[in-house]
Length: 255
Image (cartoon, rainbow, N blue to C red; front, side, top):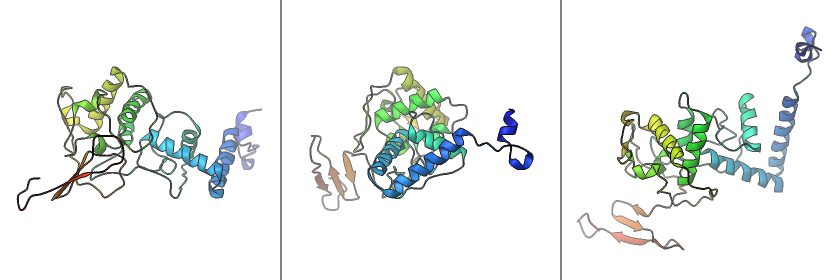
């Protein structure tokens, strides 16, 4: 029988036979929502999968809520399939109390969201860039850039620098040299277009310097925290974080 007759609506003389993939999506999305509403063990497992996919994607918007962003660079699985099917249906799932990274400062943005919006970028390039990002344990450009927010240091592109993060990242081997080259090229296209030919040993200035910090949850454990009159330094040794406190001496602006 002709496929058009099978899929066409009854009003036009067709049989209106639904697509099997559509039926699977309807039942699958309904089942996921039901399990999340019940809030039992299966719901906990689903939330763990969502949180892992959120970290792998590097997005700062909930992965099942913002389905307009391309996430083809993450590993295939249940959450990626659910995201892609919701995107085709122009739908979303909003979950309360689901973990999601936060933007850290003014002009900050998710690294992978910005890279996925580049014109002509290939899925393989995004996969390599994401591997480098996860190896460094960063999510937004503020976490990768210098603390002053004006440039990106050269050691961000050679595998010798990694952030100290409280999050549980997947163990992975160091990215290869060509993967770092791809990552550096995409970062320059996305954030440093005025300095595309900058040497690898030099800092790369950002097109838009980052502004003041937000009072948000942070996963990175910085070595030093400073206010106008106080510096708190984290110990280098592993173990409980007991900070050393330094205050300014009198009216002099030194510690």
